[in-house]
Image (tube, rainbow, N blue to C red):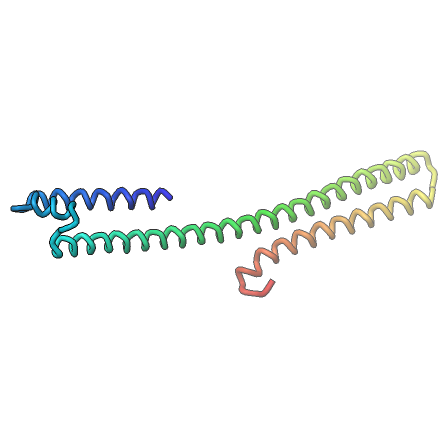
Length: 166
């Protein structure tokens, strides 16, 4: 909108310059008076029309450039919004995997504590050993799932760079 206002001001300024130029010509005041009265000479009117047409053309070009810039910005913004959504999703997945790992670490620590207590007491409890192995196995699965999620993120970033279809 600012460009349109600027162009209008330029057109008005150009018309004022034309009027001053006509007034400066010998007999220009008379020609200007005739032009204002509607009886201007065809040469001056043709000059004014040509300048007006040039300003209209410049206005149309600037309007088209503004439209092209606006379209480019909208496309860029849409792309950035998609990227933010994708990164937010990845961050959510990493957060949930991290939470699972924390819980598994707590379970693993408790199972190892129970197993250590049983060993110090000289008790051999197969159920405690079974539980510790089960928790450790689950912790390994969680760690592998986190690694796979990280690999998928890396591959998602690499695919556009190497030209593969995602």
